[in-house]
Length: 207
Image (cartoon, rainbow, N blue to C red; front, side):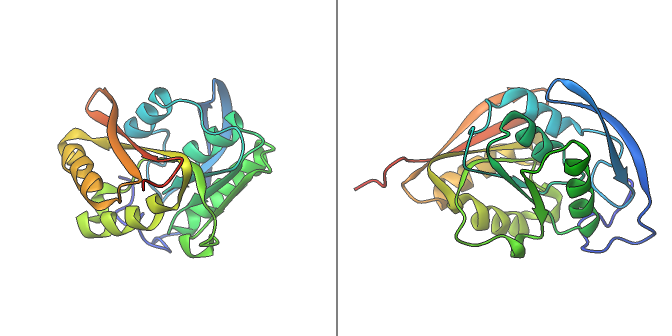
């Protein structure tokens, strides 16, 4: 990692933007990145697996990217679902600024990046995509997922990409035990050293 402080709200060192050219949603895009964030030099392997493996997001409604970084997941969602509202959350203020700036550069008015606290607690999400920050530690990760996954809308689906050697299988078991009976947790796919976990909220609450 370029910075050991990318989980901080305000990383050390100056916020210096630099150009980044990547492929998102099948086209080459020119965006901006910076120091002090996760995977500043491009799309990391886990995110690349997620974007390659998951089905298209819901075409309308509310979509969520947990831990947005410079924005690859949120921007892809917005490009694929222009009539949906994409929420992107991160604790790092640079990530929020970069995601909002990159969305504006692509003409995407349906992206709003913010801190988790700035998202209306009443919003429910039809699709959640995330490369969750495993390295923040198990307790913090569990708290993060318990905050967002219960906010899936009825019939909504979350996809999480997790490296196998960083506990994807144990996380799948924990999610299945932790979430109530209206949720199902399955393995969507395995690619390279990653698993994509699928969490689905039932369309109707079990009786």
